[in-house]
Image (cartoon, rainbow, N blue to C red; front, side):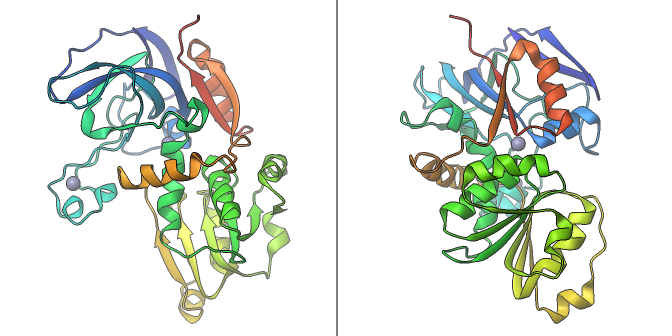
Length: 329
Ligand SMILES: [Zn+2]
Ligand SMILES: [Zn+2]
């Protein structure tokens, strides 16, 4: 079976792997699609401090069960997604219902071998069936969208809530899609106006460069760019009494503390999701016919064209890049 292999940052190749045998609690999954995530790009560039090499990259997939261990309750042929973040069920955070911040968390494709291979095995506790009505193209978005579903639970977004979303990458675009679905009054902000065309495919959404919203304030600001300048601007953009939800990962930024205190601003950090609850909510939205995510996926490549796919992802000029692992018929 073929899989991607990242020897060192920027050194990616396709390798033949031996299929591993199945443990009792495991299932074997044949990939249909894999999505290249911002964090895959960061691992590729060597920008994540806790990433380990060599590593098999990838963590966003939809696939099909091809084999089932004795103790795993799944049917062969069922389409599934996986959570790529492990949880121990034993630490203080897991026990209080927050496996997303598990002390023993490992992340596939970052510090544990990932899933960009024709086939892989995983404990069935990390696997969730996909409803038949959901297309493969939507199913591959369940995991990245669960990040946004989780973040949105920190705040109340309903009809007319003014929401600024900073960063129009995949997570930003998914946040715009959900806020739009909930009837919010959205301003989408990015430094790259090329991305605004895609944003407007989601709906009649106001777009702005960072300098165009100077002096404006919003009920809720969602920081999904993960850049120092946008984090620093985000505080200015929150209305007094409002909330800032931070989804992007910026190593460092300076916060105007006096302004934050005087505004009585509420700051939320939001990391990944809880499994399976946020995946199930993610599916509930994606399954709606009028929940349109066509604007999110911008390119598909056969997985053997991984070099071009990674190049496109690294360029940052596109939306979600998808690797197609289906066998040629
Ligand atoms: Zn991801
Ligand atoms: Zn834990």
